[in-house]
Image (cartoon, each protein chain N blue to C red):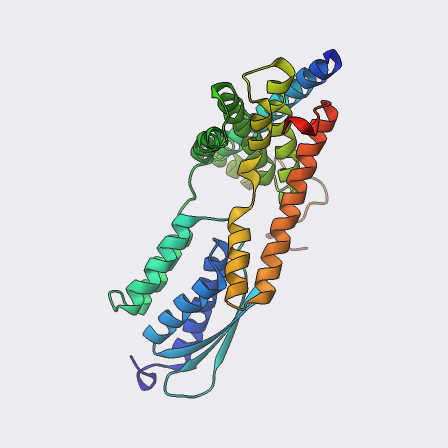
Length: 63
Length: 263
């Protein structure tokens, strides 16, 4: 019985952790990454060459 | 509106529209009989005849002008938006509005786009309502207050886990298995810690929210309507989900050493 109780608490802790992490990740995706302010930052970075790596090809790349 | 008034392009558009309508109606949980009735009704209102072939993965629709002529065939992949009764009701209402002449075909298309782009019920609302409903089920089966509270939290955790896994693109069968395992282990706490006098009922009813009831009912309905392929497909889908549910429940009971006699 003691062993089952230990397993139960372990599983509950794991479940709580998984739910907390996944919910936080979903919240971040829906409420932080897709806000107009964040989209503007991403668009600006996209338009600039800051994120361009050697060898990257873009639509406006004549090659 | 009859054939001479309408161009071939119109028939082409109608076939595409009706096939897409059928694909969405099937996806949100309508039976094949409902699909046939609604599509025929709409086709008649558009001045055409329609022959519908419903397959488990696709719908094929041949639209013939009411006055005769060559048929236009449209094939669409079945939509997988999940069971949504609000969408089902709105699409059925649309078919009647078009059939009764209350809206024009062009407006019906606009309304259709609006209906299918409407957001589903918020996930949090679904979790809360399903948890309360499952706790009520527990009471119906004779569970006491402690069992009801246990089932409420077991459903809350399991369903939320399922939603999150589905949102991340995991397979529905894996999500159901994990949700059943989570709910079963949580509700097994009633047996381990002696919460209330009906721990077995708490354990048994904690996974009821995962039973694919609509596919089972639709399978019977399709079978009665002689749509045997769709009936078998829906039945097998439901059986596989039930098997995943059972595996999750059994794994939880096995790990925690809960004897099946408590059920």
